[in-house]
Image (cartoon, rainbow, N blue to C red; front, side):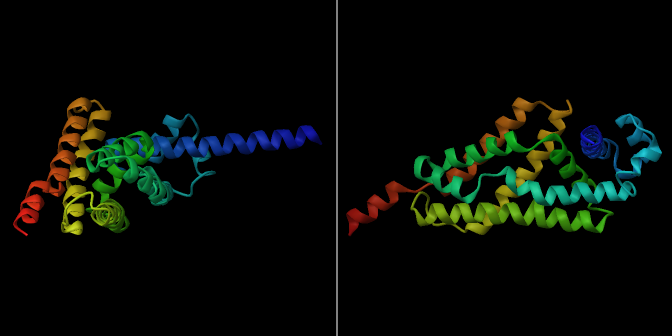
Length: 225
């Protein structure tokens, strides 16, 4: 009886591992070749299983894509520091250091499948309604909301001068989207990683400079008073 249970557990474990492998390989193939350019057979061959066996894990190629989308919705926000972590950073760091820490935190926590799914969303947004919805909600709006909250916290703590937090957040995020695409290209050997990361740092320095407190101006006003 114990052997039967052990065999069943091993079988389930292998099944879970195969499901994960199908998702990871599909994300890579979809990102490189486009969703329409990849067949179920190609996925199965890359995984090392029969095409018929793949249907034990997913109903269709569309089901694989939907699962990747669902995972992106769940895990993408977790690639950025939490509110509690941000509050700790704000107590210890200057604004530029906070933005830089977020940049490297994301770089460390975004795995290849999430990065590939972001590429899929970007490419498929022109023909897939759900991809279009996800692009605007999870790549444009949700990150901009995150940075707006961060900037407003910095304003309340008088770490930066009062600015239009929403506009700054949106513009910073739009540039970040473009640079993230280049970073993913670099991961595939199509761009220079060091150059892309360097430009990301230059970008955050530029935006932090726009928000920097004008201490000289305030001191002048005090003197006049």
